[in-house]
Length: 341
Image 1 (spheres, rainbow, N blue to C red):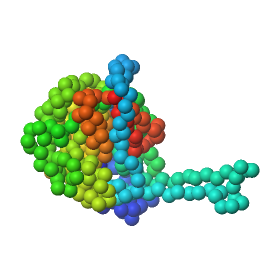
Image 2 (cartoon, rainbow, N blue to C red):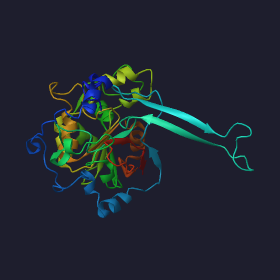
Image 3 (cartoon, one colour):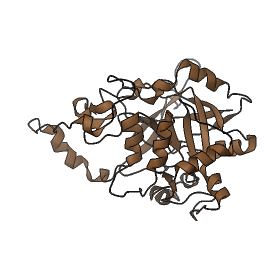
Image 4 (tube, one colour):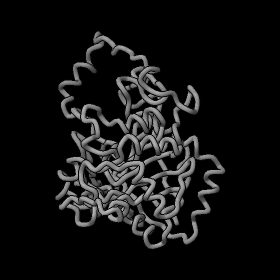
């Protein structure tokens, strides 16, 4: 997700703040008035993955019927859509490949990579330390106290519990097609919702009803909008992909919160509708899901394949296979996702 105006903070603007020890500290906000408390207690840093109990995982395992594995992550490669000042660059380094430089009698050589990237690129997860209101983050955390030059001392990804749970795909493209209200973007090669299309609670419920699914506590919900078609056309459609997106509105997000899901993922770069329903409010769905309820957001998910699999098998549920590195103090990271049906 891109925070509006982020590009305005250039290195030259930030440098004096980092080097001036006499600069006044930021005023601490009253976080209890800005952010909801965690439902898991005042010391919680984990968020909604607290809901993935052994019973939830055991029940989710029953979703594995055929053993077919469907990928849900886009390939991470230079040239994919990025936002604002974000960057991603891979550099390959070869060692001892020149004649005479090999190791041992067997003439061993090897390769390594240097991956220079910000964490919120490609198919990635937003952690609890990603979004706040002023300096107030998840569980009413005054984040200014916990920021260091290298990482956060609270709410880092190391606090996440398992994602071994049931996944649910909601194909909103099909919902809109069946309702005769699909307004597609001409740049999409396959059907997609157009930029600015609000996905409502009724749309989500219609997508669930299509496959006779009822959400249950601990589910991971993924939404297919078709917008990911533009991501796959990189770099030709990067500008169109970045220009906005279809996405869930506040009412739909609030309904997902009420269902006690652990994450919401889409084939878009921010999950919520852009431009927003109220253009004066920055990313309200992010605030509602992450900051107030500890529900993770996963962006740039590849949802087309699992949507097609669901249409073929008439099953929209699966066992979610996804791990997140125990990266101390990070606000997010790219992830690999697989659906096992």
